Image 1: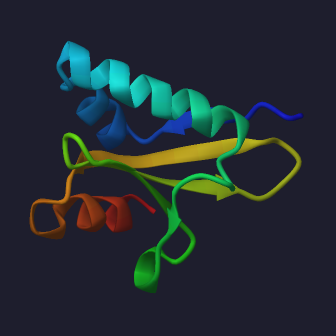
Image 2 (image 1 turned 60 degrees about the vertical axis):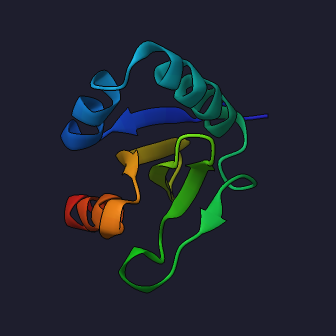
Length: 97
C-alpha cells in the first residue's frame, strides 16, 4: 500500500496554521486518512474543481479541498481549508489550482 505525500499550497498552509488546537486535531485525523486512501474518501467535486475532492468535517462545517496528482510519485495537493462561507473555500481552491 502506497503512502501519499501531502503538499500544502501556501494559502492552505496559512489556513491550517490558523486553526485552533481541537479543530487542528480533527483535521490532522482527516489528513492521516488522506495519506493512505485519498481516492476513497471525500467527495468528487464538479465544475472548475472537477479534478478535486472535498473532505468534510461536519461538526465544524470545515472542508479540505484536495487533488491527487497523477504520476510516479503519490502526492496529494491540499488546496484550501475553511468553512463553506458563501463558497469562499471553493473560490480559494479554484484560484490555487
